[in-house]
Image (cartoon, rainbow, N blue to C red):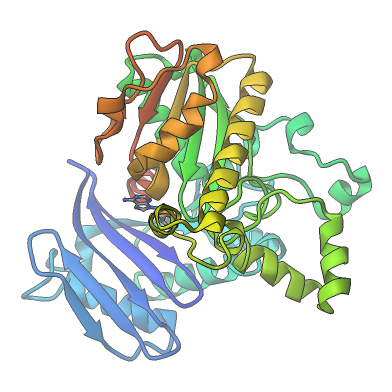
Length: 398
Ligand code: AMP
């Protein structure tokens, strides 16, 4: 079956058409600047990448353009939309309502809408994408795959904040966690790659990209994760602060004469390694280059990031009473061997050893720890689109 995977943001939309027989990508691309002017980047598997500037005032028009390209006589990869068996939509927040992916129905969409307060930037955009797609493909089954669902196995001891319980009862303020599709995919693949049953494993997945989070996976279930009510909690990220003393918000508001929105903007967009480096960059490649040129702030930003990752890994080893494997994934986790090594060197006392040669490779599933290492360390490229396609296939063929 061919499955169209859609990840819809407020002004952009990423897509992949995946053939689930052999899990190949038939075509992929991106619509940008929806509602502004509009640009479609379209890449068929066996053809030229093409950039088309075309007005897309609404998401419906953007999706129509994607469907037109997929079925185009020349550059298309399918003859008609009948060859799309299902659509899998990424949905950011499923609150406590969704502990698994779900077939899209009117009732399901109402429940997703109830979670909008928890992710005001993302969920409404996801819903717009789903509704636009439904209008254009009314008879094609669709599935919502949630970033939060994998973490619904956390116990209340892990997900509750130390605030009045009534805040949880009234507003569901708690840790939810994100990147669930990636943490689930990478933890499963880690066990499979190491030839072990995931039920017998304690795995720590480090999803280190521009957004970054860590997840403790015990027996295949998420037992704790670093992001919280929103994706702001946890690690120091590209531009997000991660954990801070909550009192910093009031302090900064007074000192900088800003309202809550202004301070949240600092924490979401002007912080992380970008802010720490004195606005050099949120990209680790730029930070490393600047550090090599003697920029101390850039070097320090990298160290603060690493130190926070180390603290989370350490706390999850304690939470699970041990660890069998540590997996690195996402842009930085998959590509930056020096960051991986510096993180793992903190665990030398536990017998973790990195193999320098293995750690210098890229782009494939690989073990980067030595034969003697007490804990296996692996790099597993994440593939959220494929994970969404697999979930969608499972639900529509049930
Ligand atoms: P992601 O959000 O998963 O796409 O990751 C993007 C981030 O990964 C970038 O901002 C960089 O910090 C990092 N990254 C990507 N490629 C490399 C690379 N070759 N070396 C070091 N860092 C990289």
